[in-house]
Length: 332
Image 1 (cartoon, rainbow, N blue to C red):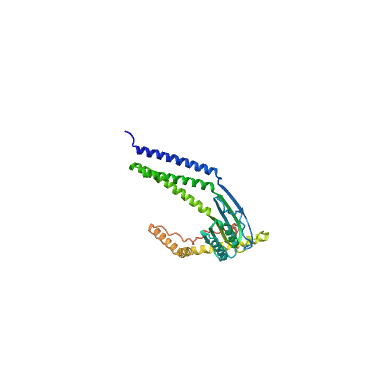
Image 2: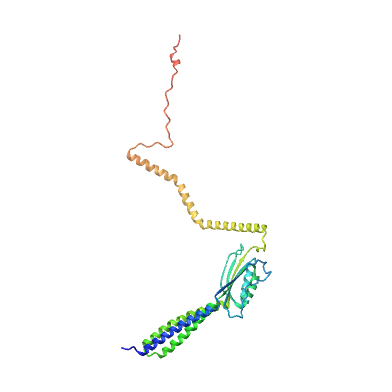
């Protein structure tokens, strides 16, 4: 029995499509290999300056007029004595640069100058340097770390694979239009489903990479302090800072102890009442035990034990007479 000609034709075309997809994938890998490899260029700058005295000078300046796919990231650490004003300046910098807050974390207490705030800011890559300059003036700059990651090779590889898969999908759609049997159509639809899944996965990867390239990520840390960190700390400054830190920790310890006592106060009151009851009822309980013991002795016909406070006097020896006096006889 000879095989059905349409099935042979579909099988041959499917094999040809699989071979073309394999060749396209190899071509994408070779093209990405010929491109520049993924490079991580990290720039780190540790600064210490007076609040609002100078702007942050970014080490990495994004190149907007280039075909390279580069992701820029930065970590900015600030301290301030005016926490509310510094927070307002940071949010204003985000708004002025056309960015947005991806996440934020706020806590601490204003009474002991321990407030803090952490922000994850996304800004357009064109405004990356401008945002660092404006945000750096919100407080006293402690540190700035920058990182640039070149993902051009990876981007080109994913893009080439996506192009090859889209061409394969078009060929499978053409085969589906020519299918003459249900079996042929089901086989083509199964392959189309696999190809479509891969296309969606690669499309999502490209969108994620494009978003990271278009919008830089800046991690901002803002901390409230009672006094700013000096540029060059002297021995006296270190001693003063150590004393201030020690005193603050001591006050926190006292607060913790007071709160602990307040938490345990109901239990301590109940324990005191219980111990007081035991002490007050101890004589009565002791007398009751003695009465029970005496009653049991009476039932057994045993003599009553002496009182524990009563101790009989030890027996005394008879007086000893002097032998000389006994031998003498009275004289008339």
